[in-house]
Image 1 (tube, protein in one colour):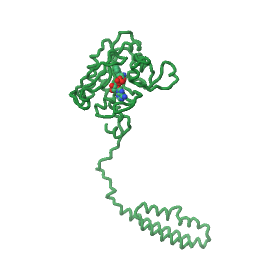
Image 2 (cartoon, rainbow, N blue to C red; image 1 turned 90 degrees about the vertical axis):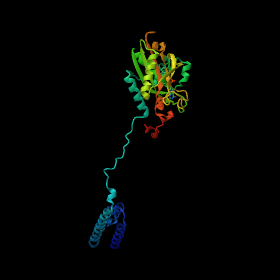
Image 3 (cartoon, rainbow, N blue to C red; image 1 turned 120 degrees about the vertical axis):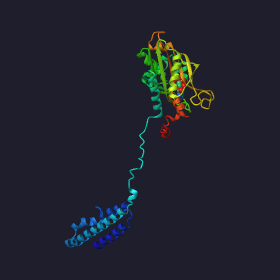
Image 4 (spheres, protein in one colour; image 1 turned 30 degrees about the vertical axis):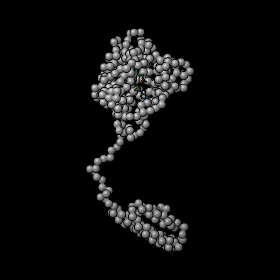
Length: 344
Ligand code: FA5
């Protein structure tokens, strides 16, 4: 019987509403008993199919009970709202705000900017070169012809391309020295430039070797530029970078694009040169390569023989950042590990 069903709905609804202990529960029961798809609404919607007599009986009954349930619901809702602990809900406007982490420049970018600022302050200009480079600029123009043993020390990622068929193959540059002849083809001395950039080597990685890393090339060319200028400049640069007096030591070495060529060390940034674990008790840290630009390189750039002289030097940015910030593994820079990145 429909009347009985309506009374049952009321009993059940009042019971469930009165047992609700949260506003969420209460909202659920309102949908159940008073919502568009509730049984009471269905009964009211179906009235039109009933006889007049039945309509007159069921209609008012269903409407009254719907109103009773709604009133009861409102009353319970007010009760629950009153019982909310407003003390807990209060906003403490004196509480410190939550810090929004806005991201920041990667440590390598910071170090690169720092290096650039020091060189710019010393009168240098910043030049650029492509990461995908021609074999010519990376090797041949730097006095490293095919089959020259110096190519072995910089194992190369060669790229496949149509242009690779000829003599001018394409590769990922293995050092920023590749930018030297590119720049000199378009500019005449005197000049002093730096070329910061990413470079690539096909080699196994370990704590001090990456396959993708960054170098800084510095090139100073003029009428009377010599290695004394280099030594002074390098000492000045590293002292500014590390914020303390740094000495430079040159050791004879071989790079085909410089003559004479050197590897250079800086006095240990940890112990100052006395000898410690960081410098393996030698007092020196190896930083990069340098030397007087080989006249063959000037020739490749189109300069007249013996007209100019200059020096070039290159060093790894990661290695420098590792020394300054006491980072013991080069692979951390590109690891994408936020715990590392957020420290700087
Ligand atoms: C060169 O790349 C020469 N182009 C440097 C140069 C420039 C010499 C101008 C003379 C004149 P080398 O391969 O030694 O040289 O690399 C230079 C520096 O790059 C190293 O001293 C080191 O600081 C850094 N480096 C080299 N290999 C790696 C590597 N796998 N991972 C991280 N840093 C590296």
